[in-house]
Each structure stands twice: as structure tokens, then as C-alpha cells.
Image (cartoon, rainbow, N blue to C red; front, side):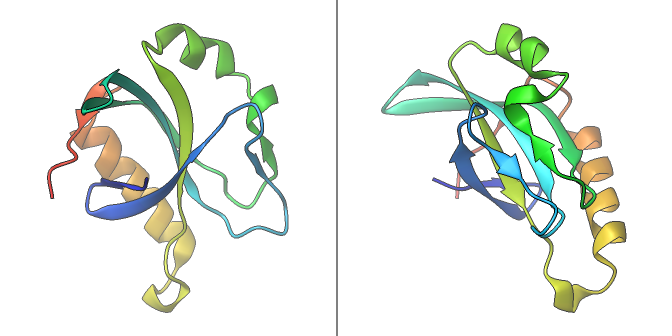
Length: 115
């Protein structure tokens, strides 16, 4: 199930124990999401987000993994958004998206699943 955050589609969920962004993968914005609640009424909380910036990231070894795990009330997952290369400077797009999301969804903020 993908999530829409700030009007952008984030693909996932990916298990932090196995999620890896390799150096040959496109740079992406990642969202650390906690899924709690009932199966018929899930609640998604944004715990953190960042920009891979083209660097390899092994989420099982991420320095913030313990903090994310402690903050999670349900299942912890990683979601990714890769900007469309046809839309111009991807680094600027990623930076703007991270800033927009941080402004609109403070850590622990609920992500609406309304369509």
C-alpha cells in the first residue's frame, strides 16, 4: 500500500530490517512511518523523513533506528518517493519536499489516508 504525503506518492511499506538504498539507486526521500490501529481503521504516523541524497543507506544500521523503534506504537515501515526526472532538478525537488513535509507533518503527525 502506497501513501500520499503532501500530494506525493510514497511507495512501500518496506521493512527497516531489510530496506536498503544502494548507490546505483535513484536518490529518494524516505518516510519512516508507524502503522497502528485496527486493520479496518489503520492510523499512519510520520515519525521521521530524510533524503538519501544518492548515498547508500542500510536502514537496519541507521543511527536513528532505535529512536524510531521506540516511538512506534505499531508496525514500523519505510516508504520512498523518487521525484520524476522530467520535472527538473531532483535534488531541489527532494529538498523542497522534505521542507514541506516537515512543516506540515511534525514528528508523530497523522497521515490522512482519505482520497
